Length: 301
Image (tube, rainbow, N blue to C red; front, side, top):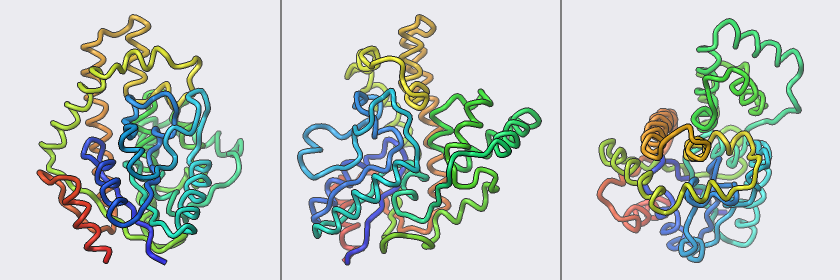
């Protein structure tokens, strides 16, 4: 059986188009490994594939969860495993693509998900929140950069709940998380590729993406969402800022600036994840998606 292909790269560097071009070359289907693209009603805020892109190749785990529904990485893992297995059973190549390190690893397998946290675990986390809130935030940042970027990390209660939601060892020291990128526990043979882009070019791409989101109608998209939103959605980049605009607490210009700053912070954390990976590095700067896809296809052959 051909290996599963996993593409990891920072927000704003064009992973979606590269994944689609690769799928067209090798007969694949794209499985999103993004913690926010699973939500319906947020195509602009979460940069979901366009209708034209969705028509080119089959996609999985895009817009499958209601925005008022809480969604865990454990549930994502179940859905991703089913999508990958189904594609392979039909003789298709499974291409996982995303910028959420924990979700990508959950899709590949090897993470254990226990039951709900015990009262003792909650007390330990809450004691840490009281004694050393910076250490608590650092633990979440190391364990799950995507969630850290999405929530209000200055709120200790939210950080505690986010660590509980991981449910695969929140008390484990951050450096031990490197085990997430070993081959241990992988459900299928896998080839992992990191998509690398020049930092200055990436910064410009982030700025342009946020501006385009406003141009496409981000504010109207958020205003149309049913209330109340899930905790995760309400704190997502773009959603939190637009809710503040709608409440009269931010101007549009201030919201735009905050979104760009939060996205840059998220990208820095994604780049930190990339340095942990034992992966093939694929340069993407100044290259069309088709060229990048052809290089990946050559390395797979």
